[in-house]
Image: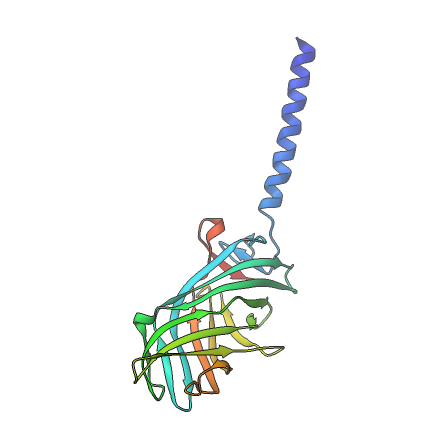
Length: 216
């Protein structure tokens, strides 16, 4: 009986040690992105990060502008390096609610849809000026024309070009100010260049109970 009791105690202790180590790993800190607070629990690879538009999305061109007041950002964390390095994301949604969008672009009367085409890449750098760098962005915008038909314009950045959003732990969001984008594809009605401004946040980690995300 004593042998069985000792064996059971040893097994329980070993199990507790394993669970303790696993718990420590799950609650690791020191990453570029954390949840709950600055220096909180790390955002993990595979976590889903999402947030609403908190400042109007405005695309300004020489022939008018598109303005959207509501929408949503969604990304998946790919890597979360240690403080002083970077974190990377795959952005799957940069959506605006067409019902809350307007257009003054010449020859158009309404916004039909604003959706990301494929995925974009995001890189978060920390430090004195934390920034979300977005590359490979292709935003597909469908506009209704004065003829009653729809025209599709793709705007974004390619290659090494990027748009940059200033990150804030006060709002747990990102703010883009007059970031240059170009026409990637579309009708001759589509402006060839423009500038994008807008904000998203608070960005939360839905994988970790919807906690707000911070950059360290």
